[in-house]
Image 1 (tube, rainbow, N blue to C red):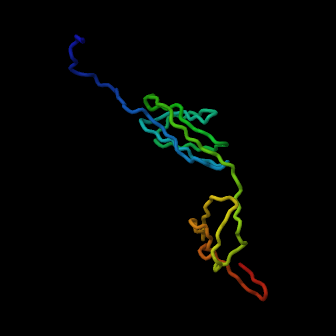
Image 2: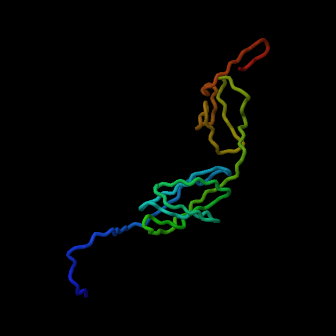
Length: 172
């Protein structure tokens, strides 16, 4: 029912149409030991700069003018914490829905002790199976085969000189 005449020209304008809303997703470790600092990564899609609110279950921290599509936040959670982006907007103020939660479980820090170590090893000594008071860890370092857990003094890139002097044996 429009009775007007058609336009023959359109004035220049800055109108842009976006079909996708901005998004943000959280990524980082799922478990840490108490006292550890971790990086929580926020990955964005859409048009920068972004602004967002990060909720940790007790409080909210606002971040503004983020131009990187992968933003890192250093965290030191004291207890198991679920993080969620509760507000997100892009350069045009277009708001998006909230992100899924990312939960970081904080485990009690336990002192690990290697059970069967000698005070020293001679480079020709047989390999030794390393064992700890807490199962589930991985040993690594010079002379250690991480897949088997054996320490081989001959591969440790250390030098031990054994000198026998009468009835005494001295290791240097």
